[in-house]
Length: 325
Image (cartoon, rainbow, N blue to C red; front, side, top):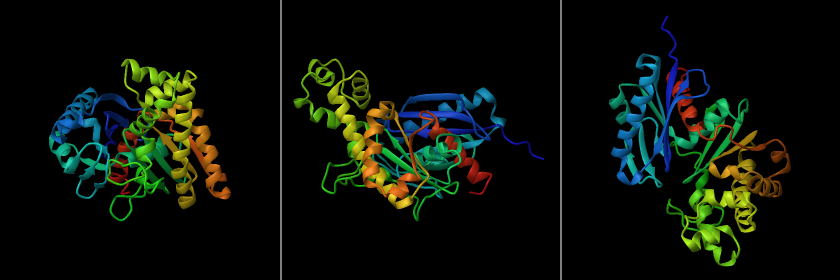
């Protein structure tokens, strides 16, 4: 009998960071974790070369013979069958044969899925959604990704494009999104969207620490700074996060009414805002979703904020290669 591999490599490609780690075959805490900045402006070939270097370094710690293969999560619509990243607005990629590029460079089998699908699957497999039958995940970062897990399987749709919840409209004639449409929730509640809204309102934010940051050039107004100022009691930052929660609630309520899930898991750095975000979000969801649906659904922060993507990517690899999912 062939011995079961000990590890699956998980790769999480984000608009800001690349993460690589080795996930135990049956799930658990990743080891040999590597993280680097993505630097998408240098193009896909540069990013892929750095991912391969990170993989070689990580796998070298445990031995190549102990690693079953590589699961990769990447932003944007992907063609899983062909292993191609079709388009990533936040990376600027089009038609990149990512799966085969990594497989050829490492000599390992590789699977490819959307990064937010992987993050949702990771939370379902090992995190806040463990045991749920129906889970929807939202990842708030450079963009907003989403993933839908039904009956233990990712719902991909007819062309692998399901789960793009960041491009649900919350204002049909609203802010321009990187995807080219208007009013997408991503344009308001992603990291850059939160920062942009905060900067736009600084004229009426006298006394805010964010206004001081912008005025004296001591730093850049970012979503992280908004969260930090809110935690310090800045009323303007608190207001921006409350508004963000209510905007997200429009999308979340629509998802609850449509899918009637057991749990919605929200991941990303902005979840560090805690009740400043989740309080207004949950209040607004209760006003918008059907009572029977919201009564059956938990809206919770992720339990695996830095590792869900790589854990989920590894879980996807296991499902495709070993479980036939």
